[in-house]
Image (cartoon, helix red, strand yellow):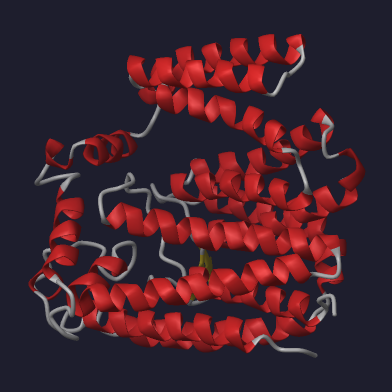
Length: 394
């Protein structure tokens, strides 16, 4: 079977860089053996990739709905634990995070649904059912709570809709509620959004029924925004306020973001060197081995180090999109688009988060952030892509 070395090498280099950064971040702390754990998970993850490379993608197509039932059960089981944050399941000495695995499972499930309904993609029933399939795991991960994974689900869904061939107009109409809610936080943003909405609906010449329904729905969602804001967790509201104004709580919720920006900015062009850097080594930067690993990269290796990592991500994304475009089966193509969506969105949001360009959501940086479940799942995605690539159109 054909093996895509570009896909493998870019993923491997990112994983090795991640282990080095984790070692640098935790060296001399109580977590100093964390890099060994991450290294062990990398070996396991590569093994998982090899296994999935050899399993025909049509097997996942046939098993998709069984996977769905199993992941729903796992997410529900995680919620019955007594801890305040209910994201992990204990399996012997190991802990598994079902929400990470759910990303891959939902890619396989939504891919199966759109593959089964390629002739009725414009049907509200087809699109509506796809959304319903997403909503159940979405609400389960939101109860953990895990807002980041919940957002990933819907980004993945929209990109897979595009990959399946859903019209841009229908995708825009589905985005309308989210755009209405976000813009409703300020009257000027809401006014601009509403004018643009009317212009697009007229430009695309939608039916009167669609026009009226969309406008009423957008207004209704906008009016619900204060209610949604009031029911967010307090830490989620703080993250949004800190994103809008990092000085809102400089010694509390805003501290992490301020220290992250200081770390990245202080690295300059070439960085302060491996195992160096005040923000990292003097423990000014919290969560430096996980969500804020990019800040460690920026401080120690500077602009050059960040450029190399971003280049590897771009190489990885290019290979995935090429696999999606050359896939022999529609299912494989849609799944590849879903994987591209998850990886690229998490890279974008995590880096934007560390730079203060997006709210802190707790989304890990693929292949770099510490976390066994995340690393294994991303390598599992690479394994499935390898199988799709091995069966591409000649």
